[in-house]
Length: 444
Image (tube, rainbow, N blue to C red; front, side, top):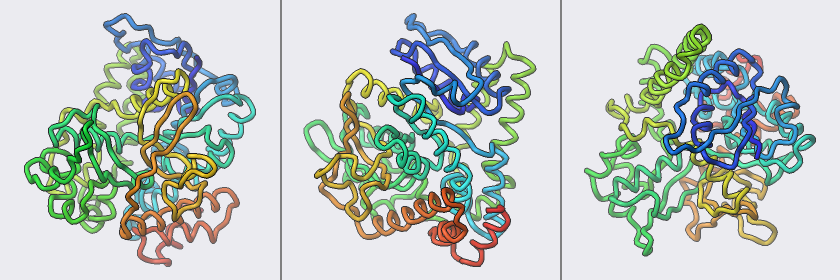
């Protein structure tokens, strides 16, 4: 089986490669618009320790063009960053100049990133449709909900978006509740980076979430509990995705970002530039340099939100970076080898098929949502919860979906009015005039 990673110079590639040990994948093709980055990542993969159990790793091929990369692929992982880390720096600084939060998936920064990324993602979808008509695309590219929805307009159910935030939340919550993360059931629904864990059940059907919410010590033992605090979590009656901290604690997070001295994007831009330069000079040390850089990257993840919630360090068990790769591999195996799995994925609201209930009845059938899905060789089927979203959560979902769809419209048709709607209607943007200035500074 042949797997292609677009964005083959991206930082998560070694995690995916390591997860492929002993899998059905015999060829991994990497493609990046920057061949130097792809070459460095090839050096990292060459230095990666081989599995102790003797499981083989696929051979690695560097493609010279997008068409070469996707032609005949069985699976395509899309993990691109249009504009590079320098683009992310601008996406963060431009909103901050207006007193607004900007991040690669959240706020005005997320919209700016989406405006750049959607046209490229659509081009990829078109080339996959032409050159790999049987391939499935697993989208890692942020903003994942927006990009997956855009690609689905070309590929339909053949594109599926993934994110490691929901699975991380489930696993942390299960451990805090004293349960085995691999055996619990769960109800999670929303949009990418805007979802809520609403139940956590044992194999015999007992819901552990009410007891967890009532236990102050248990809530203080994991990331989301510390981020949001026991008082707010009990008021919600659910565990939010970590990215909802930007919405529920906007003032505190904005203050922490301003006090940090540099944004997350600026940190990553400097860190990755130094890594690639050093690894290019010392290819024999590329893996060790990557591992050191990866650990620092994980340790500083969402540092501003942690600072805004009292300041605390990430738990050791959350630093292994094994979220995206494990979800992607489980999804790929379920589809290709009919190994059933239950995963939280980004899929169309009506992916259950004609006559099946919508995941969120207030949204169109072709809107991409993030929800629990059953996956096997026949495809992906959303698990529709019998419990509807509450009005507060649904309100946020509807507003953010309007922003996502306006972003796609603006990117697709170069529509300035749609771009203005996308920025100005975002819950973290409090002024149409500020939105106009953000777009003007971004040249959008």
